[in-house]
Length: 629
Image (cartoon, rainbow, N blue to C red):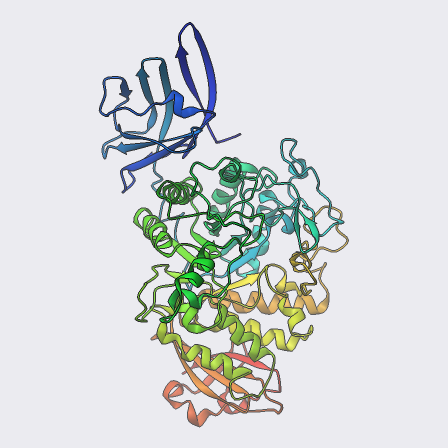
């Protein structure tokens, strides 16, 4: 069912009458919201002629109880009108009728106010914390549960072809839902899907390739979920089903840009709706321009207003009508679908004050919500700049979480086994040592790879021992771990002139697949070893107060041996990794500040209990143990 409601103008002029269908955004709203203000965007051909501006209040305006029309705004484009409404604190759910009767025009709008969910903050919109284990996937590439929606007749792209890495493949919400048991066996508690909003675009040219919008980053209508994934109803069903299974949902937001086929680009409301340039101008990608005490205004403008690519028009979030539209959409999506968190794509390219405004608006309505700012940055300072931090920068971001690229780079360096003074495991140690710049580093999202990077198994040259080191750090360091789909079963590849090579289908997600890695029988011995290791450690982590909420003490790496403890009053866990060239034993005499009072150690993977002195690690070996008194 198409959730986007159609509204009717009843327009009477002279002797004739006509009915015109038009769109209203947001498509509905709720009573009981903390912010009583609501701005409706009306979009239709020459709608400004039908809803003239006149002084309010007026006798020609009638509205049902609980809503008040405060203002009517016209903009340069006569195809848009904006209405400012106030929803009374005591308003009841139901359909409201807004009627405007002026000479030559009679407008009647039916608008629904729904009851806000009583489960917000309880079983939905719960937020994501360090107790969670995130699983990132591209829905189109994960599993096809409903082949009937692979091609939608009304959409521009009429192809679905698994033989082409650049085409859509048919994965959808139903396919993901079919594998909830798999996620829970793996120890996953939250799913992060790349964008699910409608991408009704034709093929776009990127890197000389004709590519479909299978990844979801080319929005064409904010209030429509892509029908090839299941549409609005399918997404609501998916979110509800996930929450019933105790699985949270993270939605991917894009405030920075839209598809060139979005009606905001083909029919913009105002001349400054987009960040326009005389000719195509891309961003400089240097986040330093935003906090550089010596930086130029020009470099900062190019960073914020440059277009990511020539087919992704850059939105001007300084326009107040656009800002309100985007903020209300974020609130609408959170309340309607019950999502638990937002990952904000291209965070560092957005207007900074706007980002603080949308984050504050979301937290006002949903205090538990988590907002991950995605900023691929060059330094720990830059990483911390885009979240709540302890630094004295002139502008203070309020995002309560950040995608932690620097810890990723630290883990990748450590997996590389270099023995350099500031490289290898020393880089990971140094990165963790700089956590003082974060207000709460436990809210950082840590990861080994994602949909924009070479797959980590290929980065370590398909060396399981090196990958095991990274997986151990991922699931035991501070923060919120995120696993890219398929890493647990050793999916591999590097980007070869395109991102598509690291976004392949999960084997077994389509009927007729020759291999099904969702099952033990369908995996090789090494793939099962990897899956079992991740599952065992992730499920231990789920039960471990030390790993999910505890403190950290790390010790200087010595000849490649890196040791840290995670602990609280209930539990102490030791993690030791040997990235050196020789066998090594933990340096127990230097760890007494954490080991005093304990006499033995339990291997959390095998369950074996040993004395401290029995532990010895070969090169590329890691150990996770729970201290026993």
